[in-house]
Structure formats: structure tokens, C-alpha cells
Length: 389
Image (tube, rainbow, N blue to C red; front, side, top):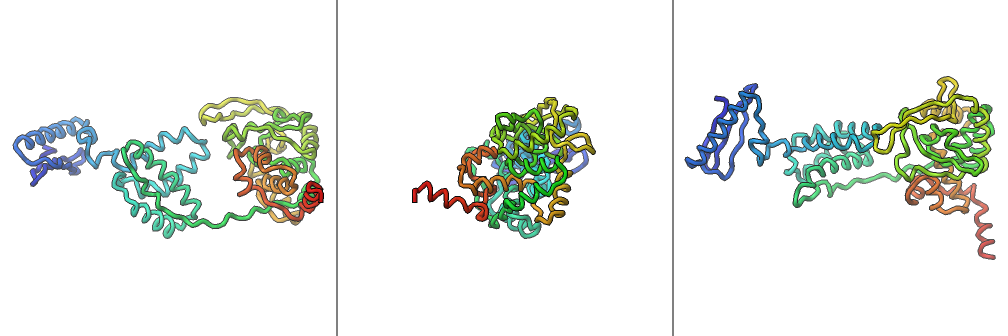
């Protein structure tokens, strides 16, 4: 017999040994060991014995209200999160999320009964494990907590009443690093010192269009309407994977400055005879792929296709060093454009947000735009004229 019962004072314990001989048990609480209850418990034990021998025993089915059932544990909802969320985000984002869950959440929480998680448990994990032991930054912990809450939500959405035990976590954040846009003298040196015409065109567009590096790299002839002065942003490339813009707001029509139009016309002359390429572009559902035939603007003659981010990053670093300008990442071109535009006093933050593909001006003020005093001396003259002073 691989299962049996043990009468207790106010309850009955059912025990069994699995196919490996490991002993386990469940207690029928509030079930006094009367003859009737013992007979029922013994019937359950005999059924378990038969199921174990047949290889069909399912603890969750036999004891649906047990605190030990799979759905009682945090790990069950980690698996549910994996199954669901993998199809809802881009592959690159999913890789990042999965790494955070596996490295910081799964080991600590998988075998915890989710209904019994207390505020103190979460505090001990965050302040003890993540802050003190792993010494993670507040921003990283914030991202990990966001994933933890999403997993916890798969359980809590089925509960009548529940309080989020992570709601009392407080994190101290450093002031964000001040952006470091190029001023006009640096921009002039960057564009005028470049001897290679294709790279000069690229640096000009990078600094004066407001495109992110992931939008700029896969820009194609088919995206341009230079007669009317527009570029249409339809796709991005991240780690070699093409996909439509990450949201509909980022799919946009960008108005181009004359200096950018001139650089793009120059680039068209350089690459007009290059063959078009067919690439697979992932749609917004993260599953559907469609073939697009494009003639990319920023041709790399060594590879036959456009530059990758890493290739361009190395060229950019080496070039800035050669002309003695402090290095700033490729995406600083986007910051520079935003800051230069704001410093003119000519346009509103709302117009700039639309150019950059943002739904509001928050990112403009917090991250992209920095007033550049040395490039804005004319504003007071414009203001005086407007005020008729």
C-alpha cells in the first residue's frame, strides 16, 4: 500500500508515497476522525494508491482546496506570465524581461505560497537581496518590481479582495544624468571636417533630423518625399531585427530642415545605382512578418547593406576622437536636435514632440531638450520686438 490515513484530534491526515518512494501528505482540516469521515478519507487514500500505480495521480485534482496545489505558488504564475507575455512584446524586450525574471525573481519566489506573501517578505527581498546583496540600481529594481507586480497580477485578478504587498516599497533615485548636446560650433566642426561625403551626409541627417539611431539606420529611398520636405518613419532595426515602429505615434511624417534635404539629395546621388534589398519586417503583433523591398540610404560597401549600430558606433567614436570632440553616443544626435530647436524659441514643445514621435511633451522636458545659452542669444531680441519695447 503506497497511501494511507492518520487520525488526528480534529482532522485526518492522508499520506502517500510517489513513484520514487518520496512521502507526502495532505491534512483534511476541520474533519474530526469520526467513523464516517475515516471511511471517506480511507477511500481517498485507496484512490490515490491506485492512481499512483497507474501513473495518473494529480494532487491538484484530488485536493482542489489544498494550500499546496500548484496554483498556490508564485512559480505557477511565473509560468503563466512566460506563456502569455512572450507574444505581447518584441523579441528584444522579451529577452531583457526574461533575464530579469530568471535572475532576480524566480529563485526567490517560485516556491512561495502566493496568498501568504506579506509586505515584510517583499521588503526583505528588495532592501536585503536586491539593494544590499546585489547592489542593483534603483532604476533596475523598479523594472524588476514592475515584472514582479505583473506576475502577481495573474493571481490577484482572480481574488475578490487583495492588497499589493509591494505597494509600500520606496526607492531613492539619483538625479538623471544631464544630457550633453553638441553646440553649433561642434556641429559645424563635425560636418565640415568629414572628408567622406556619405558620412558627412549621415552626420548631418543624424544631428539635424531628430531621428533615433534605430530609425536612421534602416531609412530608405522609399521613405523620402524631398520635393515636399518630408521623411516617413515606418520602421526601426534593433540587434539586426527589423520591425515597424514600436507604437503608432512613432510612425510619423517628419518635416525636414533644408540642410537635411540637401544632405539627403547628395546621398541619393551616391547610392542611386545600389540594388534594393528584401528584408522581413515584424508587424506590431510581434508575430507577423512581411517582406519589404528597400533601397537603404546608409550603404556599407563592406557588407552590401546598411551600417549596423555597432559598425556606426565605432566609426562615430573614432571620428569624434580624430577631431578632438568629446564622445557622445549616436542617439545624442536626437538630443542635440531637440535642444537646438528648443533654444531657438521659434517652435513649441508640442511641435517638437510630434517631430520626435512622442505622445506628449514629458520626454522633451525630462530627457531630450536642453536649453543651450550660447546658441540662443537672439531670443531676447525676438522677445523685445514682439513686446514692442
